Image (cartoon, rainbow, N blue to C red; front, side, top):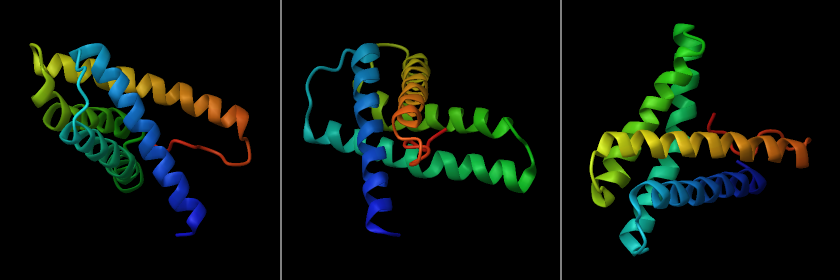
Length: 130
């Protein structure tokens, strides 16, 4: 990979980390940022940026499932959030909090992706999660 591709990959991870932090703060009321919390945010963002598109593309290209791949990728994101972030910060029902965090994250990423396409049309998709 070129240096520019690595830079965009790192920017994607940072954007997803920020979105995950805001969503987790809204849902779980997590206020203290510790090193382990940042590491969990980074791990979740990394897995979301790498595994979710890979999983979604595999389902679409190999099994011709179309939009079912997007739905399964969303559930994969919910499970990643549930076991990496919410298990430590939960106030109540962990799966509901995971679903809310995933919905907020996906909507925010779509908005950021739309803005990125409008501002930088020659770059294409800045955040390549969905």
